[in-house]
Image (cartoon, rainbow over the protein chains, first blue to last red):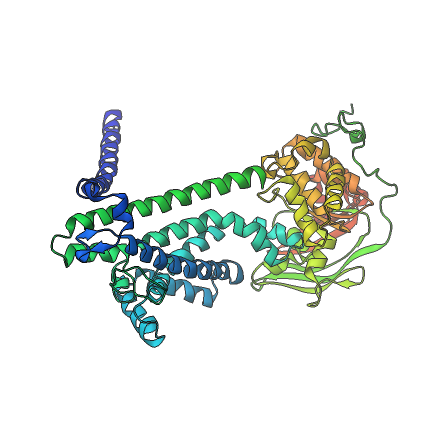
Length: 284
Length: 289
């Protein structure tokens, strides 16, 4: 092959890669542009904190924001400790090829691929009916926890696997107990991975609609307890866009708040991870 | 300077090394080896997933000696070393059989307190394995784990061990800096200090100089020599010149069709000058291995 044709090949490959990368950013810019274009005018301090009126065509999203935060809080408050425990079990207490470990990993992979509507039906049957929690923020949060658990577990497990085996062996050689090794060496090292798991889980939880319609319900007033029904931001957007004539402007504004929330969570987590890493490196 | 001296032995008299007033801290006592058996292995065999890695090793190691385990890769030297502090327990499918004693303690007994055993038997690995936090915390962690919490005692012990490994003057102003910022040789000496902090009786060194540059290697080697008579030292090394320089006894291992066996064991001088087994002679002369 001549030098010229090899240069030509390189050029074509570069163009292909650049085109692909550019195309990927177009939907993101489009979505953000569309949201800002249609939603920015309706976004205000009072919109974020006041109660909806006239089925959401007027007023704001205050109670819905509170319900969303409560649902997501319950979801992560349940999923993170359980996920961390399971990830520790899989990576530190079972061999990689152990039958139980393989069974759990296989189940998690299947769970991760289950459509959210199925989780909604499962949550409705288990939490709302069998456990008698009814349509409530608690039911919604717990259903979402089941949904994000596979993501949290697999991400955290990977971050435990990324810690070199030599660290564990040298800890054992110093007569450190397993608990001390996990607490002082493995958990701090896996913390950035845990944050990634939390971000991914939060992203899925905060954007969920189908699973919540069946479990936490539609009610748009401020919840008085966790046993009250509550409407999440994603459900509110769905309702305004699909069921309420003239609800589109507020649907856009709500979507803008939702995306802003996801951005804030992502940036905060990245900031904490960066600070954690630099603190550990400098003065731990 | 003796022309036969290997070039990386930068200072044959480390006590006179510039910058280290009393270094190494342990004046090497003569004779180094008390003829008291410290470690006794009888018919020790190690298998991984049913595959024999080491068979029927019987030897007695004297207190205070430096014993070098030499031989080609894959002949079970490291496995033997790891069985002494039961790190073999961490390897899935590893089975150790036979008898292994430190003084009267039966190492392989299921009732043996592993945390206490590993406190008595310190170990250094080929690659320096400092933990990803500060120099101080690296040394404090094992101390706290084994019951020392008093701040002044922690500080004095840390200073003592860092002086023992000749690191005190290099790091005393930055004890709270990350240990991973140290050079390879300094990290290895910190690992040694971390093992010494628990006042072990026995030190297991698995090729402690092989990942270091010649200069650092020389410093660590001087340090090992200074430990003679204060600790029972077992060192795995592929560096025959190093074994010849530092060891009192040599255990020569060889792999027979994939199974490691102890071929010859005895005083270093005898092994190097009058090896009994022809394999030992061939390995030492460089014609095999």
